[in-house]
Structure formats: C-alpha cells, structure tokens
Length: 112
Image (cartoon, rainbow, N blue to C red; front, side, top):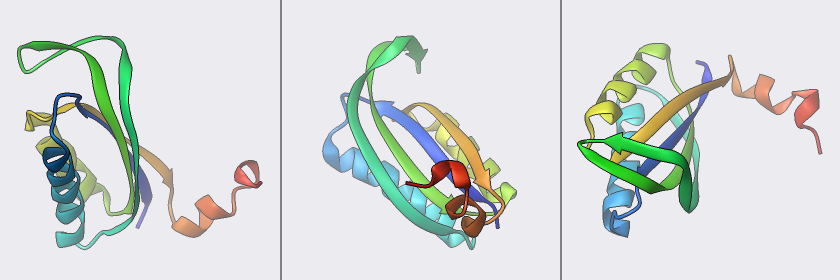
C-alpha cells in the first residue's frame, strides 16, 4: 500500500475535544478500511497565508495537523470526500510520499 501524508487545517476556534474527535474520525476511517496509521503531528494554531472563505465564513487562522498512513487510493479518495463536507475542516491535502514505507525511509535526501 502507498504511504501518504494528510495535511489538514481545521478551524482555529475548535475546542480541543472537537479537534481530537476530528483526528480520531479520520484515523478510524483509514483503519476500518484496512489502512495503517503511522503517526500524528499537531502543529497548533498558525495564521493562514491568506484569508479563506469556507462554510460561508472567512478565516485568517487555523489549527494545522498531519497524519501519516498507509492506504490504498480508494481509501484516500473516500477520506477526502468526507473531509470536504466536514464543517470543522478548512483545507486538506494528501501527499503520496512513496509506494512503501521502506522507500520513504531509505531516501538519500532524507538522511540525517
């Protein structure tokens, strides 16, 4: 299964419990379909590069978080559709890091 990174920007006004629920829901969707979640990284509140209009509101700050996981492309597509309609999410993107976790770890430009 390919190795992916999900970069997500959530509303900055979310309570910590809502953010945890969003992350838990995303991870559960991957796990229930046969994927493997490798880790999370919370970058916290940061200003957005430009003002974003989402769900009929304007936002200038967001909570950034990252999830690393292995999954087939159909799982990624379904997760993207669910994040698109989730009112807690401002933006999201998936980055395919490699075909396998071993190829990502063994990359020479990522050493040190």
